[in-house]
Image (cartoon, rainbow, N blue to C red; front, side):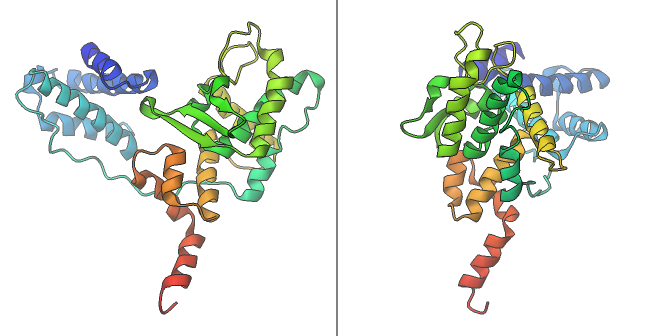
Amino acid sequence: MKEFLEHLSLERGLSRLTLLSYRSDLCHFWEYLSSCGFPRLPEITRNHLRGFLEWEEGRGKSPRSRSRELVSLRSYFQYLYLMGALAEDVTELMHSPRLPQTVPQTLSEEEMGRLLSAFDAPPEERLRARYLRNRAILAILYATGLRATELCTLKISGIHFDEGVVRVLGKGGKERVVPFDARAAQAIRDYLENGRKELDRTGRVPYLLLNLKGGAMDKRRVWDVVSEAAHLAGLGKHAHPHLLRHSFATHLLANGADIRVIQELLGHSSISTTQVYLAADRSRLQEAFRRFHPRA
């Protein structure tokens, strides 16, 4: 498994978080094999893999989690086959669990406006730096649709005010360029000029967002910021960074953006991933029907 993970890192350039996910999936598989008497690798069959997925289902794993685990196992067994450790790839004909088509939850434009204003006025001067940072977090998430991990790894050097874009490193180490609006630019400038200097203890951290100890923020803290903003805004619903990403895509679509453009902005490798937002924007579908169907 160590050699396989090194292969994913060196040959495919996968991120540390993705490697940890692969490792976790494979460890769950070894745990299952232990309960089956731990057969040698050449003795593993498709029945062992199917049994593992059924075992995971019995432990409450969702279809999406089991589908991801099968992707990890496929990559692992393909690697073993290509390296000559196995005579065949036993995952070749296996199908992923059927995933339910879910419509992503979003905020309305009015709710988003309230959320973005949650940190406008700090109650105390000592909270000013934190409020400016949090306001910048919300502004960037909604203006760009970045994932929380992408936001945490965003460097100051990746922000180009003259062009109005950020350069972000997405999944699989793929870089993409995403524009941002004037209000987001102002929120970032306010934080850089009046907030970040108070948090930057060493002056050597390249990342845009810093925690209260002066280090780079992590994804969990970004989730806390969004949740706190929802509470301050009185939204009465659970909010998280991906909710802003969903809202970013849905609002673009509702205002006429092409689905292919949204795919590029979100960094989706497949258009099918982006098309879920079509279901969220039923008004657009109804308008298209009224405009183009001959009997509408």
